[in-house]
Length: 499
Image 1 (cartoon, rainbow, N blue to C red):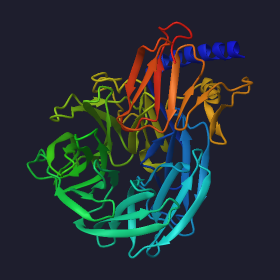
Image 2 (image 1 turned 60 degrees about the vertical axis):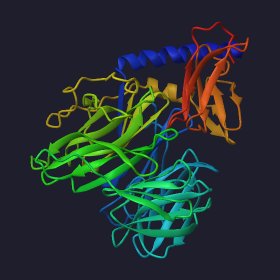
Image 3 (image 1 turned 135 degrees about the vertical axis):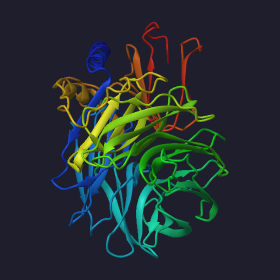
């Protein structure tokens, strides 16, 4: 059986690299959820090679469904879709879902449109519902972001009906434990755990920090360079936070609007609230036909760890536009050239992550007509672009979305799925599953002919090391924000020499 498994692994890797080269490292896919407008502005990587996207209807009635779909490492929606019915109309769903660790899966929280109630749900990794809850709050809250709580459960941020930042703490079963509002105007789009305890939130030109009990530590106003017309960026939205390692603070990204321009921005803060630097990535004149905007996706770490890659989309509000990216040095914000990501499908709203060795973006295609996925296998390498600037999407001449051959189906079936919390291969040609499992990490394939994947719960800042049978260090990789799958290429080592 081992001999058959090694042969399969070799064939799989050969096919994988052949297809990647053929597709020039850029993959796209779309899928219809339903026939009404919807919002999908967040993705999360799975423990293996795939990704999950979640959202709901908006500007429509009834709005009583949450939608979940999985897409592959090739940005193809070729697996499962789930619909979860809610007890009442929902508020707009933005970025308010995240990974859950116990039970393993995903947590989401969204305000109910009628009254001061909140709906929370936990699913497993394939979108099946474990349970859902409705809690009554002291006042209505619309939510924009959620993350695991440092003391168990989850925290979700947003704003009150009076336009002040707000946070709700949920226990591990989705029951709201406390909700506080803060004397800061705006809408909180994202919340992340802070170094040293508590949380940082980013909202409309505001960044605040609270302790683990919800008490306000400090509040800061985001300062940005002036717009091309000389006016200030008086309004920002869609903010996202990228925590950096140790004492390096965190990155804030978002979209900024002045009297005449829209711009994507990137800024760095210390954990004590000092703004280290801020940069405008790109601007467009909102007075042009179609009201073009630069709507931010967010930032991820580059492979070197000393730069961030900020991504956004530009072009008309609808039907959307081209995906763009820029490298910035973490230390001083020095900017590289703005580069097009080569998407062929117009993107309305999107969110980027780095996982499984890829820069992956998911969201909504132009016109809110379909959910959208993009995967690039090269861009995480510093200063390497898949396309040169100017080769990106022409929104006035949009080609058909590239299709993917049936090859992907056979490759997808070779990826592990879960049974009783353990990975298993579901390829009909496979008669066994060879794997090594640990409490939080899984290695596959094992044995392997070269490329080895390590997946599971990853601790930021930790190091994965591979040793040969003599105990010598063969290879190591550091865990960075968003990593849930690490690959090691051991093709240069003799068989049976590494562990």
